[in-house]
Image (tube, rainbow, N blue to C red; front, side, top):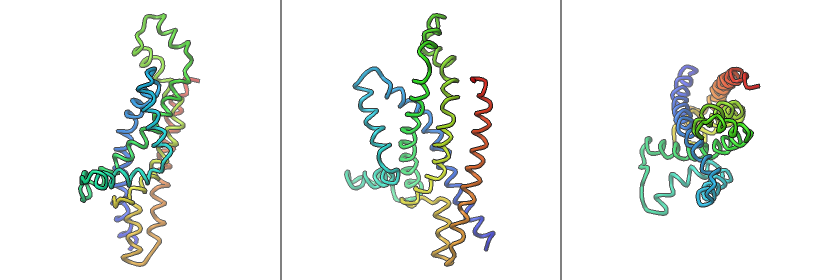
Amino acid sequence: MFLTVTLSLLEGFLGTLKLFILTLVLALPLGLFISFGSMSKLAVIRGPVRFVIWIIRGTPLMLQLLIIYYGPGIFMGLNVWGSDTTGRFTAALVAFVINYACYFSEIFRGGIQSIPVGQYEAGAVLGMTRRQIFNKIILLQVIKRIVPPISNEVITLVKDTSLARVIAVYEIIWNGQAFIKSSGIIWPLFYTGAFYLIFSGLLTFVFGYIEKKLSYFR
């Protein structure tokens, strides 16, 4: 029984891992792009971007999952996602990417705005373009400053992936809970915690290593 449960949870964990990796790959660059919009000097860009960030950060991720999955069908009569596993996973991924991109954007914005103006001016004096100043002077310092808050969000993402089950996306907790109905045992549900703890521990180690590598900015 233990081997059967472990194999089932590993299968569910692959779904969790897939959602986690794809969310990070898409949300990090999107978050950086959104941060530029929220810092724009043009109010017509800055205003709507900050309004969207406010809505996403102010509402539960579970609610966003339900709206994104069921919303098109309810409000427009369009079955955008379909009813198969791929469609549900895609809807969950879209919700996660939008949510975390908005959180990451605020972290990026705080990191960028924390760099003293004098460093931008020094780069300009050296004849560097704005892009060169950002890429060669600002970016690495920003990365150093945002690693701790980013690592916190990434570890939170590991646990938030369990919310995808509200739209029937198969992940590790879904598989663990299935044993309650099929076999009347609850310990597999608690067993899922070991997977989260191990994965979060590995991520904590990785981010700690990254912070040490960036310590030359002290």
